[in-house]
Image (cartoon, rainbow, N blue to C red; front, side, top):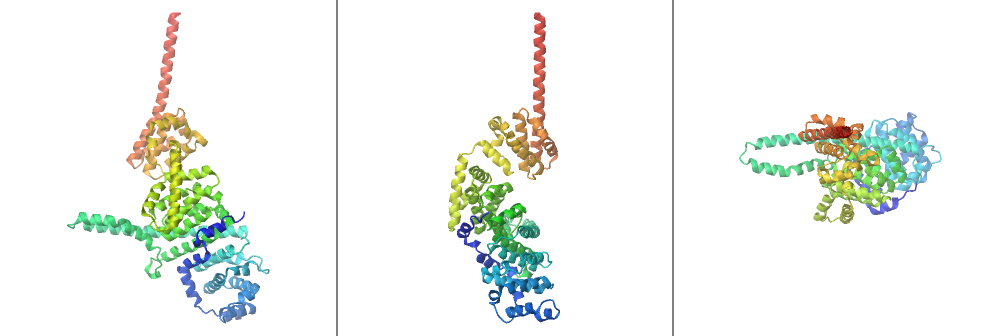
Length: 544
C-alpha cells in the first residue's frame, strides 16, 4: 500500500516531525544518560590488541571518535556501516556498546539522509539483525537506544523494513509498552494508597478539632487537585534520588517506546503490521489503566496517526476506543491531551469511507457523554484554535446524529458500549413492546452482549440494568425464555441472586420471576384452552 495521508499528517501537526520528537527526548532520562556516556573515553587500542576488532575498524573509530574527523561517515559510508556493525557484533561489554550506539544515534540525528549509510551498503546482507539482537540484551539503555536507532533507520529511508524483522521489532515495542505500563500503574496505585492512608489519618485528627466541618469542606474541595497532582508529578523530570526506586526508569522507558511508535506509525504499511501484532488493543488497554499525562498524550497520538487510514479508522471502535478516549477527555487536565483526543474523535467521523460507520461513531460518542465535555470546553473557550475548531465540528456532527437517532439506536449503542445505565429507554414499556423482537437481529448480537455483560462486568449498575433488560425481553417476546436459556443468560441471572450489591440481587430476582412467570402464563393459557375445549365437547355431547 502507498503511504497515504503521510504528507497531510505531517502538515497538519508539526509535532509529528522527528526533530520535535527528538526535542522531547532531549529532556528524557535516556538522553541525559546518553550525555553522560558521551563523556566517556573508550580504550580502542585494548580491543585491537585483544584482536576483538581489526586494524581498519580501529583506525576508523579512533579518527571519528578521538581525532574529530566528523565527516568520515559521508566520505566513507560503506566502511562506516561495516565498522559500526562489527563493533556491535564483536564487543560484549555493555558500556562500550552503549557508547557505540550513542555515536550511531548522533550520526543519524545530525543528518537524516545518513540512514542510507546503513540501508544502502552493498556489503551488508541484513542491516537489521545486529540491532535486533541487541533488543535481547539485559541492559535497558542498550535496548531502548537500539530501538530508537531502528525506528530512524526504518522511517527515514524509502525502502520499507523487511516483514519478519518488522514483526519482531513491533512485537518487542508492544511487549515493552505493556510491561512498563504495568510497572507504572502499580507505582501509581501504590502512591494513591499512600495518599488515601494519609487523608484518612488527616480526617481522623480533624474530627477532634473545633472547626471540623469547615476544615472537612476545605479538604474535600482540595481532593481532586491532590489526586491530579499525583499524576502530574510523574510528568516532571526529577533527579533520580527524588523518585521512588525504579520509577524514573519505568516512566522514561515507556515514553521512549512510545516515541518509537510515534515515528513508525506514520508509514501505512507499518500501521497494518502494528495491527497484526495486536498493537491497537494493547495501546487501548494501557490507556484504560493508570498512566501519566505524557504517556497518555503519546499513546493517543499513536491512535490519531493510525486513524488517518480509512480502514483503521473504521475498525478503531471495535477495540472499544471511543469509551476509553471519552473517559480520558472527561478526566483530562492537560490541554495537549484534550487536543489530541478531540483530533482522534474528528478522524473517527471524517476518515471512514462507510458513512454508516461514521454515524455509529457519532452515536457512540453521544452515548459516552462526549457532548457534555464539548459543552464544558465551549464554555472555557480555549485559546488553542485547533481545540475550538474540533469542538465546533464535533458539536455539529453529534447534535445532528442525536436528531436522527431512534430510541432503538440509542439502546443498541448503549448496550454495545458496555456502559449500561438507567436511561429512559430501559423503563419504557412502549419501547419493549415495539422493540423486544429486534434484539434477535444480527444473530442476537445485543442479547449476546447483554449475557456477556452479566458474566464479565464488575459494575453493579451495569449488572442491574442487564438483568432488568433480560427480564423485559422475556416478558415481551414469546420465545424469549428459550433463547435466553440457550445463550446461558438464565444461569448468569440466577448466579447474581447472591451478588453483594442489593440492587443487583433485586433486579436479578425480578428477572428470574419474569422468566418463571412467562412460563406460568403460557401454562395458564394452555390449561385455559384445554378447559374451554372440554367444555365445548360437553356442550356438543349434550346437544347430541
